[in-house]
Length: 155
Length: 252
Ligand code: HEM
Ligand code: SF4
Ligand code: FES
Image (tube, rainbow over all chains, first blue to last red; front, side, top):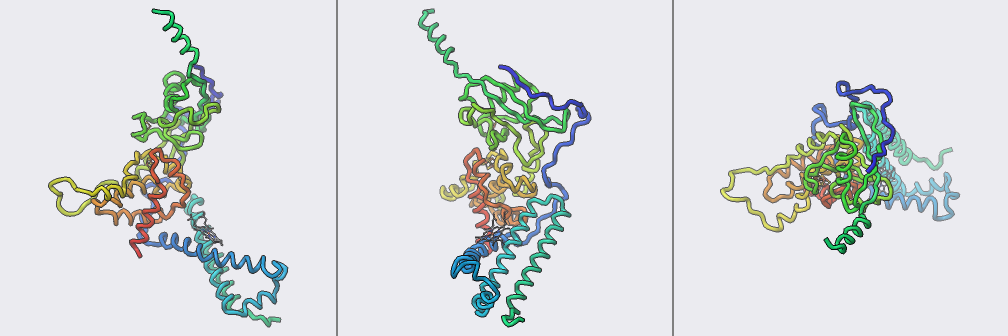
């Protein structure tokens, strides 16, 4: 048996038994300051919403992509007239409205999960989420406004 | 002694089962350096032996400062979960021949917990989560004068999750736990499952409420790392999903 050691790590002996190096804390280690349980079903409803909206989104999004990109000559047909034609029917208005709301809330909740996972400092998490919620509310409201007030005869 | 026997002994020693294996160990000693480094050890060992035997050879013959936990050496105490060739396993249940000894075998501490020295991590957050789910029988009313009886089917319901040895291989293989130690982690949920589905226990509701929290079961993303890691073959992800289902059916 022989030992084939890689070169010793510390050239400069900065640490010793009385002065050990700081150990790397696990990310957001559970401490006494950890917030107490919330006692709501919010996360459960969030989880259920991701699955249920996902199922509906399969139909809405795939249908949407099919109509927009494949059928009837593909993307080249999309123009003001095409959109105006589809939104003349309450069916397509409802389709797009539901798709807008579900995709936005689904995507926002998904990104909330991602932020909760990856942002380590409480402040970073808070502001990232505020940015996310602002963007979501803005997009949902603007989209809804357009669908409801769309005027095909706009000059 | 007859020469026949001597020949036999000689032949046996010629066909030595020993091979030279490189163990590449992640070393960390806060009393020397703030950096963790890789160190290679060449060990002559029978490939039918286990990684733990290799670590013993290193510690006993090559470098006594190598620090790791082990107790039973037979897959029962759960002390020696470590990251071997990038996967969480028990060193005492991993045969060297099964993990390609031609190449260096990498050995690291499990992830997501604070490394104290070499392969030893601070298990406290892990056991805190375990304690939080109240892993003991809770009943109401008077103590029965004899044992609490249970049918074979009722026992079968939570059989899988009774096998846990609290090695932390699952929890420290979970990417959600790596990023956020607040998550209870698979092991705590497995041990809650063991009592939630026990017909003799009466605090299932309380445990479900604890795991309904924002750092409870809903953080699980079904990556199946825990099921892959479990040295006891527990279907960890399935147990977590069963707790989720119990929470949902309880509400609706
Ligand atoms: C096409 C149908 C879709 C289905 C079936 C679906 C399904 C799901 C499910 C079940 C989850 C939860 C995953 C988990 O908890 O582990 C999820 C997460 C997520 N979804 Fe969707 N989704 C769909 C469409 C969309 C769309 C259109 C968006 C974007 C607007 C989106 C954005 C996200 C994001 C950001 C996450 C979080 C990712 C993560 O947790 O790592 N999804 N999706
Ligand atoms: S469930 Fe399996 S991997 Fe997790 S702590 Fe228990 S024995 Fe170890
Ligand atoms: S030493 Fe006890 S489980 Fe491996």
